[in-house]
Length: 178
Ligand code: IMP
Image: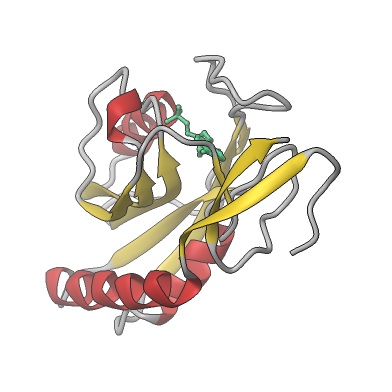
């Protein structure tokens, strides 16, 4: 893909590898939630590609909702401040909720969302993330399903951005300044 001036991309996880892993996660979730009323909650914007693929790999009559929270803004450093920009449209009361996130970094965002959804009366709340930067964790969050553990590099693609760029990449790529 063409890059913005001064940026270089290096493939970390290829699209085909992501597809295979997402299929596995979908099969596992299908087994785990059989006979349960499942609602996926995607965290915008980063999870939009992952949730679209994952939902189609889950063979259950599930519901989908979205939340948007503030994250890094225009910087690549977590501010530690989480603010709800878009709340859920539907009630989660009595539902089994699976929060779908693109990446867990410090854990601050998911820690907040996890508490928020639990407080809304969900029957169960679990977390599914495509990527996990384990070494960066500041608060412990229970990640029940994960695609890949990655090192402490800034990545883009498959929904993830740097200043809104590269969400449309099929691969997950390391981005560096030249
Ligand atoms: P946390 O609150 O530090 O766990 O950050 C989670 C959010 O930070 C994610 O939902 C992403 O929006 C963003 N983020 C963390 N690491 C990266 C990265 O490597 N690339 C792009 N966005 C990231």
